[in-house]
Length: 366
Image (cartoon, rainbow, N blue to C red; front, side):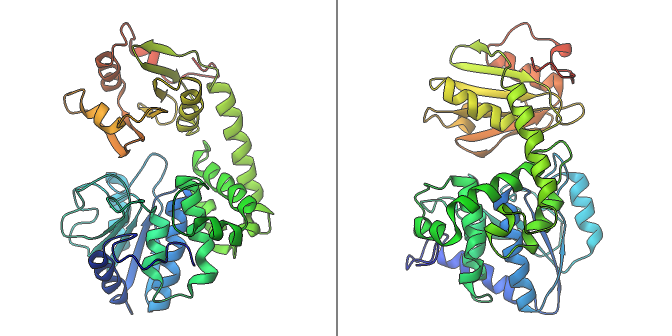
């Protein structure tokens, strides 16, 4: 059985939503389709699948990848999308918020994040609420099956699923699909591709280019595609930065542990995961003051079963000047101005921190 191909009518998404999404995609023959994917492996794998299907339909395709710290609702990215002047828009793995991405442009959102609010007027294919929740690459793989030969493209859905949920995820057919794709090759390729967006250089466009050229996971893991050596350099940088910043001594307020450090690389999620293993009874906040200018980017992770989005929203804070409490119940965070971040951690019980504590630093992690 191919990954995700079951006889369940409402998995990986509702049959009605799947039919509506296929009607939308099938209607793009001869039109200009703009595809905007998230920059992780799930989003980029979804993008390759969507490109293959759109081309098979007979559409002309343009891809726009968000920049460092951007997403589908970032004003600068939205302006770049508007300038393309496409006939239709596909937003992959980052559309689970209200508010149009490009107003008046017919849009299809494919997503799996915890949300019931999507851009008004858009067609939505969401895996949220359909257990086990399938990642966006698997949703896209199911979506495009009428226009492509599914077997040769299964590895892309495997890559996105393994990247987002892990190789042991309870997804129907994943174990056999991993065997067909090569489990070792998949895990190596995922690590390389994800390092591209985590690097301070933000090489997500290169990762997409490598993925577009590859015919299987081994092409990437064994370096058969131009650009893989640069991805390996990205991974070395990320590994070095994780090792450095994970040495940060935590601060504690009740069952919350705060790690505050500065890095140009997006390593705060990796540091949080590492410390959550060490502090299994705590909610770990890894906050990076150096990832974006004048922002503090932070993530929450925990080994407990606590809904972290609900935890953040339960603080009853005034409106924050940035991103806050989006994503998954077990993997959330945000990006705040320094004053808003200080208000946030003070509400958690961390007292005495001042503006110079959250300024961009040099090599010292703490």
